[in-house]
Length: 407
Image (cartoon, rainbow, N blue to C red):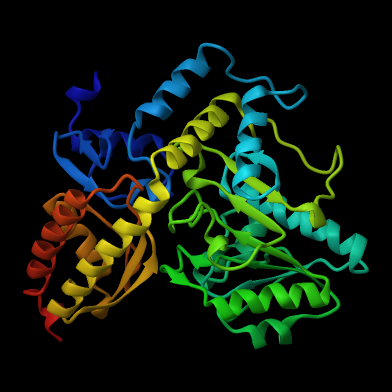
Protein backbone atom coordinates (compact mmCIF):
# COMPACT_ATOMS: atom_id res chain seq x y z
CA UNK A 1 0.00 0.00 0.00
CA UNK A 2 1.40 3.43 -0.94
CA UNK A 3 1.48 6.60 1.15
CA UNK A 4 -1.32 8.18 -0.85
CA UNK A 5 -3.58 5.17 -0.26
CA UNK A 6 -3.35 5.46 3.53
CA UNK A 7 -5.46 7.94 5.48
CA UNK A 8 -4.89 9.41 8.92
CA UNK A 9 -6.73 6.58 10.68
CA UNK A 10 -4.54 4.00 8.89
CA UNK A 11 -1.32 5.69 10.00
CA UNK A 12 -2.51 5.91 13.61
CA UNK A 13 -3.41 2.23 13.61
CA UNK A 14 -0.02 1.21 12.17
CA UNK A 15 1.83 3.42 14.64
CA UNK A 16 -0.01 1.93 17.59
CA UNK A 17 0.72 -1.58 16.36
CA UNK A 18 4.43 -1.20 15.59
CA UNK A 19 5.81 1.82 17.48
CA UNK A 20 6.40 2.06 21.23
CA UNK A 21 4.04 4.42 23.03
CA UNK A 22 6.64 7.08 23.78
CA UNK A 23 5.06 10.13 22.18
CA UNK A 24 1.75 11.89 22.68
CA UNK A 25 1.19 12.87 19.06
CA UNK A 26 -1.14 15.40 17.48
CA UNK A 27 -3.76 13.82 15.20
CA UNK A 28 -2.10 14.56 11.86
CA UNK A 29 0.49 12.67 9.80
CA UNK A 30 2.88 14.98 7.96
CA UNK A 31 4.08 13.73 4.59
CA UNK A 32 5.61 16.71 2.77
CA UNK A 33 7.23 20.05 3.50
CA UNK A 34 8.44 23.07 1.55
CA UNK A 35 9.69 26.33 3.01
CA UNK A 36 7.54 27.39 5.94
CA UNK A 37 4.76 24.91 5.12
CA UNK A 38 3.95 21.23 5.62
CA UNK A 39 1.18 19.02 4.29
CA UNK A 40 -0.55 16.10 5.98
CA UNK A 41 -1.69 12.77 4.58
CA UNK A 42 -5.13 14.25 3.86
CA UNK A 43 -3.63 17.06 1.73
CA UNK A 44 -4.17 19.86 4.24
CA UNK A 45 -1.52 22.61 4.40
CA UNK A 46 -0.13 24.12 7.60
CA UNK A 47 2.04 27.15 8.30
CA UNK A 48 4.77 25.66 10.48
CA UNK A 49 5.81 27.69 13.55
CA UNK A 50 7.29 24.62 15.25
CA UNK A 51 9.91 23.82 12.59
CA UNK A 52 10.68 20.35 13.90
CA UNK A 53 11.20 21.83 17.39
CA UNK A 54 13.65 24.53 16.23
CA UNK A 55 15.42 22.13 13.85
CA UNK A 56 14.36 23.31 10.39
CA UNK A 57 16.08 26.70 10.54
CA UNK A 58 16.00 26.95 6.72
CA UNK A 59 12.45 25.66 6.50
CA UNK A 60 11.51 22.34 4.95
CA UNK A 61 13.55 20.80 2.12
CA UNK A 62 15.68 23.88 1.52
CA UNK A 63 17.33 23.49 -1.91
CA UNK A 64 20.83 24.02 -0.51
CA UNK A 65 20.43 21.21 2.04
CA UNK A 66 18.73 18.90 -0.46
CA UNK A 67 21.51 19.41 -3.01
CA UNK A 68 24.26 18.92 -0.44
CA UNK A 69 22.76 15.68 0.85
CA UNK A 70 22.00 14.33 -2.62
CA UNK A 71 25.53 15.03 -3.81
CA UNK A 72 27.18 13.61 -0.70
CA UNK A 73 25.17 10.39 -0.67
CA UNK A 74 26.57 9.56 -4.12
CA UNK A 75 30.17 10.08 -2.92
CA UNK A 76 30.54 8.82 0.65
CA UNK A 77 27.90 7.84 3.19
CA UNK A 78 29.93 6.64 6.16
CA UNK A 79 33.57 5.91 7.00
CA UNK A 80 33.77 6.12 10.83
CA UNK A 81 36.24 8.30 12.71
CA UNK A 82 39.17 6.00 12.10
CA UNK A 83 39.96 8.15 9.06
CA UNK A 84 39.94 11.82 8.06
CA UNK A 85 36.63 13.04 6.69
CA UNK A 86 36.64 16.09 4.41
CA UNK A 87 33.07 17.21 5.17
CA UNK A 88 33.68 16.90 8.92
CA UNK A 89 36.79 19.08 8.76
CA UNK A 90 35.01 21.66 6.59
CA UNK A 91 32.10 21.90 9.03
CA UNK A 92 34.46 22.18 12.00
CA UNK A 93 36.24 25.04 10.20
CA UNK A 94 32.97 26.91 9.63
CA UNK A 95 32.03 26.51 13.31
CA UNK A 96 35.49 27.62 14.30
CA UNK A 97 35.00 30.80 12.29
CA UNK A 98 31.58 31.43 13.83
CA UNK A 99 32.87 30.80 17.38
CA UNK A 100 36.16 32.70 17.03
CA UNK A 101 38.40 29.67 17.10
CA UNK A 102 36.66 26.92 19.08
CA UNK A 103 37.35 23.32 18.09
CA UNK A 104 34.52 20.84 17.48
CA UNK A 105 33.55 17.30 18.36
CA UNK A 106 30.56 15.95 16.43
CA UNK A 107 27.89 13.57 17.70
CA UNK A 108 24.33 12.71 16.65
CA UNK A 109 22.11 14.69 19.01
CA UNK A 110 21.92 17.43 21.59
CA UNK A 111 21.89 15.00 24.49
CA UNK A 112 25.11 13.45 23.19
CA UNK A 113 26.67 16.89 22.79
CA UNK A 114 25.83 17.65 26.43
CA UNK A 115 27.18 14.28 27.53
CA UNK A 116 30.47 15.21 25.86
CA UNK A 117 30.49 18.58 27.59
CA UNK A 118 29.86 16.93 30.97
CA UNK A 119 32.73 14.51 30.42
CA UNK A 120 35.04 17.31 29.33
CA UNK A 121 34.11 19.42 32.37
CA UNK A 122 34.70 16.47 34.70
CA UNK A 123 38.12 15.89 33.19
CA UNK A 124 38.90 19.57 33.76
CA UNK A 125 37.78 19.22 37.36
CA UNK A 126 40.01 16.19 37.85
CA UNK A 127 43.02 17.97 36.38
CA UNK A 128 42.52 21.51 37.68
CA UNK A 129 40.02 21.39 40.59
CA UNK A 130 41.35 18.54 42.74
CA UNK A 131 38.93 15.98 41.34
CA UNK A 132 35.82 18.19 41.31
CA UNK A 133 32.99 16.65 39.31
CA UNK A 134 29.67 18.35 40.12
CA UNK A 135 27.73 20.37 37.56
CA UNK A 136 25.45 23.23 38.63
CA UNK A 137 22.55 23.73 36.21
CA UNK A 138 19.38 25.82 36.35
CA UNK A 139 15.84 25.15 37.44
CA UNK A 140 13.45 24.99 34.48
CA UNK A 141 16.30 23.94 32.17
CA UNK A 142 16.33 21.09 29.68
CA UNK A 143 19.51 19.31 28.56
CA UNK A 144 18.46 15.94 27.13
CA UNK A 145 16.96 12.51 27.76
CA UNK A 146 20.00 10.37 28.62
CA UNK A 147 20.49 9.55 32.29
CA UNK A 148 23.18 12.17 32.84
CA UNK A 149 21.42 14.92 30.89
CA UNK A 150 18.15 14.08 32.63
CA UNK A 151 19.98 14.54 35.94
CA UNK A 152 21.23 17.91 34.66
CA UNK A 153 17.74 18.98 33.59
CA UNK A 154 16.03 21.25 36.09
CA UNK A 155 12.48 19.92 35.71
CA UNK A 156 11.23 17.28 38.14
CA UNK A 157 8.66 15.96 35.65
CA UNK A 158 11.50 14.66 33.46
CA UNK A 159 13.32 13.05 36.38
CA UNK A 160 10.83 11.34 38.69
CA UNK A 161 10.44 8.06 36.79
CA UNK A 162 14.17 7.42 36.48
CA UNK A 163 15.42 7.73 40.05
CA UNK A 164 18.02 7.12 41.21
CA UNK A 165 19.71 9.46 38.75
CA UNK A 166 23.49 9.78 38.36
CA UNK A 167 25.20 11.74 41.11
CA UNK A 168 26.98 15.03 40.55
CA UNK A 169 24.24 17.43 39.48
CA UNK A 170 22.39 20.16 41.35
CA UNK A 171 19.98 22.86 40.20
CA UNK A 172 19.53 26.45 41.33
CA UNK A 173 17.05 29.17 40.31
CA UNK A 174 17.64 30.68 36.85
CA UNK A 175 18.90 34.27 36.77
CA UNK A 176 19.94 34.05 40.43
CA UNK A 177 23.69 34.54 40.66
CA UNK A 178 23.76 34.43 44.45
CA UNK A 179 22.13 31.00 44.39
CA UNK A 180 24.88 29.78 42.03
CA UNK A 181 27.54 31.08 44.39
CA UNK A 182 25.88 29.47 47.40
CA UNK A 183 25.69 26.12 45.58
CA UNK A 184 29.36 26.19 44.57
CA UNK A 185 31.67 23.97 46.60
CA UNK A 186 35.03 22.30 46.28
CA UNK A 187 33.20 19.55 44.36
CA UNK A 188 31.97 21.95 41.66
CA UNK A 189 33.59 21.60 38.24
CA UNK A 190 31.24 23.52 35.96
CA UNK A 191 28.11 25.61 35.48
CA UNK A 192 25.72 24.56 32.72
CA UNK A 193 23.29 27.18 31.40
CA UNK A 194 21.00 27.95 28.49
CA UNK A 195 21.35 31.65 27.68
CA UNK A 196 17.72 31.35 26.55
CA UNK A 197 15.79 28.50 28.14
CA UNK A 198 13.92 26.70 25.36
CA UNK A 199 11.86 23.77 26.65
CA UNK A 200 11.43 25.73 29.86
CA UNK A 201 9.28 28.24 27.97
CA UNK A 202 11.59 30.75 26.18
CA UNK A 203 13.10 32.59 29.13
CA UNK A 204 16.17 34.71 28.28
CA UNK A 205 18.90 35.14 30.85
CA UNK A 206 19.69 38.64 32.04
CA UNK A 207 22.97 40.14 30.89
CA UNK A 208 23.92 40.68 34.52
CA UNK A 209 23.41 37.01 35.28
CA UNK A 210 25.47 35.76 32.35
CA UNK A 211 28.27 38.23 33.06
CA UNK A 212 28.15 37.20 36.70
CA UNK A 213 28.49 33.53 35.75
CA UNK A 214 31.49 34.31 33.57
CA UNK A 215 33.17 36.32 36.34
CA UNK A 216 32.39 33.64 38.96
CA UNK A 217 33.80 30.87 36.78
CA UNK A 218 36.96 32.88 36.19
CA UNK A 219 37.33 33.63 39.90
CA UNK A 220 36.69 30.05 41.05
CA UNK A 221 38.42 28.27 38.15
CA UNK A 222 35.14 26.69 36.99
CA UNK A 223 34.05 25.74 33.49
CA UNK A 224 31.15 27.67 31.91
CA UNK A 225 29.10 25.49 29.54
CA UNK A 226 26.45 27.10 27.32
CA UNK A 227 23.77 24.79 25.94
CA UNK A 228 22.99 26.21 22.47
CA UNK A 229 21.00 23.21 21.29
CA UNK A 230 17.77 25.14 20.77
CA UNK A 231 18.98 28.75 20.77
CA UNK A 232 21.95 28.26 18.44
CA UNK A 233 22.30 28.22 14.64
CA UNK A 234 21.03 31.77 14.28
CA UNK A 235 17.69 31.47 16.04
CA UNK A 236 18.20 34.52 18.28
CA UNK A 237 19.59 36.78 15.55
CA UNK A 238 23.19 35.85 16.30
CA UNK A 239 24.72 32.53 15.34
CA UNK A 240 25.14 31.64 19.03
CA UNK A 241 22.85 33.02 21.72
CA UNK A 242 25.89 33.49 23.97
CA UNK A 243 27.04 36.19 21.55
CA UNK A 244 24.36 38.41 23.12
CA UNK A 245 26.12 37.90 26.46
CA UNK A 246 29.57 36.45 27.27
CA UNK A 247 31.91 33.81 25.87
CA UNK A 248 31.62 30.37 27.51
CA UNK A 249 34.34 27.74 27.72
CA UNK A 250 32.27 24.95 26.16
CA UNK A 251 29.32 25.19 23.76
CA UNK A 252 26.86 22.45 22.79
CA UNK A 253 24.78 22.45 19.60
CA UNK A 254 22.34 20.24 17.68
CA UNK A 255 18.81 20.84 16.32
CA UNK A 256 19.21 23.48 13.57
CA UNK A 257 22.90 22.88 12.86
CA UNK A 258 22.30 20.71 9.77
CA UNK A 259 18.94 22.09 8.66
CA UNK A 260 16.99 18.95 9.63
CA UNK A 261 19.59 16.21 9.35
CA UNK A 262 20.54 14.76 12.78
CA UNK A 263 23.81 16.08 14.21
CA UNK A 264 25.24 17.28 17.50
CA UNK A 265 28.35 19.32 18.23
CA UNK A 266 30.40 20.11 21.31
CA UNK A 267 32.79 23.04 20.90
CA UNK A 268 35.55 24.10 23.27
CA UNK A 269 37.94 26.98 23.64
CA UNK A 270 41.64 26.52 24.46
CA UNK A 271 41.16 26.48 28.26
CA UNK A 272 39.11 23.28 28.19
CA UNK A 273 40.53 21.70 25.03
CA UNK A 274 41.87 18.73 26.98
CA UNK A 275 40.45 15.61 25.34
CA UNK A 276 43.10 13.21 24.06
CA UNK A 277 42.65 10.13 21.84
CA UNK A 278 40.55 7.55 23.69
CA UNK A 279 38.81 10.01 26.04
CA UNK A 280 35.64 10.19 23.96
CA UNK A 281 34.31 8.74 20.74
CA UNK A 282 31.41 8.09 18.39
CA UNK A 283 30.62 5.83 15.46
CA UNK A 284 28.20 8.00 13.53
CA UNK A 285 29.09 11.47 14.82
CA UNK A 286 30.49 13.70 12.09
CA UNK A 287 28.95 11.51 9.40
CA UNK A 288 29.70 12.92 5.89
CA UNK A 289 26.02 13.35 5.02
CA UNK A 290 25.16 15.22 8.24
CA UNK A 291 28.27 17.39 7.91
CA UNK A 292 27.48 18.21 4.27
CA UNK A 293 24.03 19.35 5.39
CA UNK A 294 25.62 21.39 8.18
CA UNK A 295 27.99 23.11 5.76
CA UNK A 296 25.11 24.01 3.46
CA UNK A 297 23.05 25.29 6.39
CA UNK A 298 25.73 27.59 7.80
CA UNK A 299 26.65 28.95 4.36
CA UNK A 300 22.99 29.66 3.61
CA UNK A 301 22.48 31.42 6.94
CA UNK A 302 25.45 33.70 6.30
CA UNK A 303 25.03 34.24 2.55
CA UNK A 304 21.31 35.05 2.80
CA UNK A 305 21.67 37.29 5.88
CA UNK A 306 19.27 35.12 7.85
CA UNK A 307 20.63 36.38 11.18
CA UNK A 308 19.35 39.84 10.29
CA UNK A 309 16.09 38.34 9.08
CA UNK A 310 15.65 36.46 12.36
CA UNK A 311 16.07 39.73 14.24
CA UNK A 312 13.69 41.71 12.02
CA UNK A 313 11.01 39.05 11.75
CA UNK A 314 11.32 38.32 15.45
CA UNK A 315 10.59 41.94 16.30
CA UNK A 316 7.71 42.04 13.83
CA UNK A 317 6.22 38.85 15.29
CA UNK A 318 6.69 40.25 18.80
CA UNK A 319 4.61 43.30 17.83
CA UNK A 320 1.83 41.04 16.58
CA UNK A 321 1.93 38.96 19.77
CA UNK A 322 1.72 42.13 21.86
CA UNK A 323 -1.36 43.20 19.90
CA UNK A 324 -3.00 39.80 20.38
CA UNK A 325 -2.13 39.81 24.09
CA UNK A 326 -3.85 43.16 24.45
CA UNK A 327 -6.91 41.79 22.65
CA UNK A 328 -7.27 38.48 24.54
CA UNK A 329 -7.09 38.52 28.32
CA UNK A 330 -5.99 34.87 28.65
CA UNK A 331 -2.57 35.38 26.98
CA UNK A 332 0.11 37.82 28.09
CA UNK A 333 3.84 38.51 28.57
CA UNK A 334 5.26 38.08 25.04
CA UNK A 335 8.98 37.33 25.38
CA UNK A 336 12.01 35.94 23.60
CA UNK A 337 14.83 36.89 21.26
CA UNK A 338 14.81 36.71 17.46
CA UNK A 339 12.65 33.85 16.22
CA UNK A 340 12.45 32.20 19.61
CA UNK A 341 9.18 33.51 21.11
CA UNK A 342 6.53 32.60 23.69
CA UNK A 343 3.54 33.98 25.54
CA UNK A 344 2.00 33.06 28.88
CA UNK A 345 -1.37 31.29 28.74
CA UNK A 346 -3.88 31.45 31.58
CA UNK A 347 -6.21 28.68 32.78
CA UNK A 348 -3.96 25.95 31.34
CA UNK A 349 -5.26 26.65 27.84
CA UNK A 350 -1.97 26.10 26.02
CA UNK A 351 -2.82 22.65 24.59
CA UNK A 352 -6.29 23.84 23.61
CA UNK A 353 -4.84 26.75 21.65
CA UNK A 354 -2.36 24.43 19.92
CA UNK A 355 -5.17 22.07 18.86
CA UNK A 356 -7.46 24.87 17.65
CA UNK A 357 -4.60 26.54 15.77
CA UNK A 358 -3.85 23.25 14.02
CA UNK A 359 -7.46 23.09 12.87
CA UNK A 360 -7.00 26.58 11.41
CA UNK A 361 -3.78 25.56 9.65
CA UNK A 362 -1.11 26.88 12.03
CA UNK A 363 1.34 24.66 13.90
CA UNK A 364 2.34 25.92 17.36
CA UNK A 365 3.78 24.25 20.44
CA UNK A 366 2.87 24.27 24.12
CA UNK A 367 5.84 23.40 26.33
CA UNK A 368 3.44 23.27 29.26
CA UNK A 369 -0.23 24.24 29.76
CA UNK A 370 0.82 27.80 30.65
CA UNK A 371 3.14 28.46 27.70
CA UNK A 372 2.67 28.87 23.96
CA UNK A 373 6.00 28.52 22.11
CA UNK A 374 6.79 29.67 18.54
CA UNK A 375 10.10 28.72 16.88
CA UNK A 376 9.59 29.19 13.12
CA UNK A 377 12.28 28.94 10.41
CA UNK A 378 14.79 31.76 9.94
CA UNK A 379 13.47 32.22 6.37
CA UNK A 380 10.21 33.62 7.78
CA UNK A 381 8.73 36.49 5.74
CA UNK A 382 6.42 39.40 6.51
CA UNK A 383 3.67 37.56 4.62
CA UNK A 384 4.21 34.49 6.81
CA UNK A 385 3.94 36.56 9.99
CA UNK A 386 0.82 38.31 8.73
CA UNK A 387 -0.79 34.99 7.86
CA UNK A 388 0.19 33.48 11.22
CA UNK A 389 -1.33 36.52 12.96
CA UNK A 390 -4.63 36.07 11.15
CA UNK A 391 -4.72 32.33 11.92
CA UNK A 392 -3.80 32.83 15.57
CA UNK A 393 -6.33 35.64 15.92
CA UNK A 394 -9.07 33.37 14.56
CA UNK A 395 -7.91 30.62 16.91
CA UNK A 396 -7.92 32.84 19.98
CA UNK A 397 -11.34 34.24 19.10
CA UNK A 398 -12.67 30.68 19.07
CA UNK A 399 -10.94 29.80 22.34
CA UNK A 400 -12.31 32.97 23.95
CA UNK A 401 -15.80 31.49 23.63
CA UNK A 402 -14.91 28.46 25.74
CA UNK A 403 -16.03 28.48 29.40
CA UNK A 404 -12.45 27.95 30.61
CA UNK A 405 -11.28 31.13 28.89
CA UNK A 406 -13.98 33.25 30.50
CA UNK A 407 -12.90 32.68 34.09
